Amino acid sequence: MNPKDFLPNPYRDLPAEGKVAWKAPSNIALVKYWGKKANQIPANPSISFTLDACATTTSIVYSRKEESSQFSFDLLLDGRPKDDFKPKIQTFFERIVDYVPFLTSYHFKIETSNSFPHSSGIASSASGMAALALCLLDIERKLDAKMDDVFFNKKASFLARLGSGSACRSIEGDLIQWGIHQEIPTSSDLFGIKYPFDVDSVFNNFHDTILLVHKGEKQVSSTVGHNLMHDHPYAARRFQQAHDNLNKLKEVFSKGDLESFIQIVESEALTLHAMMMTSNPYFILMKPDTLEIINKIWVYRKETKTPICFTLDAGANVHVLYPKSVKEKAIQFIQNELVAHCENGHYICDRIGKGARKLVENTQ
Ligand code: PMV
Image (cartoon, rainbow, N blue to C red; front, side):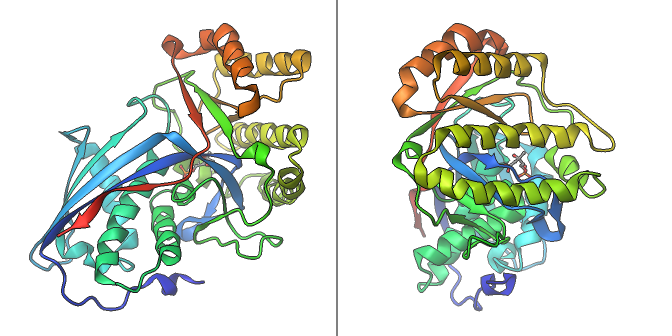
């Protein structure tokens, strides 16, 4: 497919008003997306587990306005106006207006809230942009009775990607791949797809306990970080490594090979941070407690042979991944040894999830 396939047919009969609401989950990458080309095209393919508990709920009340090229919207976070988020939404609207041209025909009241605590250091951009894209596309679906679920999910992912790259992996569950890969025939740079190959049942019920090591705003945004990959001395090799890791994962997933899974996932996390440390300018997002946790996981895994591992986002928090079969042991270990490294002892128990859900029927 190419971007033109997402241009709608001219609309007939725009409704006067209506309301939609969607809940979209966050996701955690196993092979990381880091580095991008123009128009939010990823420099390398990635794959993620869709999460369940960490999610954004967004509702939109829309009403017809005078036709003009300007966007008109109010934005509320947890019931309160959030004007500092508006420029991000404005940019998002500018990027997607060709694909959802009704954006200039309505005033939108956008209300959003996150299930995870505000400023927990968990990025809300993936779940937030996914929920917003789903609401907007739901409005368009009212105008195009022929839009089926397959196209709806593709276009929602396509739109979400233009808000925040990783958001395109937050529409469906439970294992989502994004970015062209030679061995994955249906893969695309434009949207995420459900992983098309066999996955052993051990990966169906993975848990992700997110240790909130540092809740403050990170010093370097993802946008800046992605851009630093342009002149990065190790970029080409890193992008190739992501392709290779996706290749390796094919057998790992089908065989349920936890040992190799752990090796690939942890290497990906550390490579992401190694790219940050070796960019120009260089930066470090991990904190001393991040490293303490990683070391404790390694010691625990060696001593107990429990298949528990870590991954990292672009921040100091640690995602602890493990299959459901070792949940009791893992939680015990986390509580006894790792929670002490979390800010105010805070952590979030999450697990692999099924994707976004519609909350309010699009009414007019
Ligand atoms: O979606 P962005 O632009 O915030 O980038 C996210 C990048 C990582 O979270 C670090 C990796 C990934 O693949 O999700």
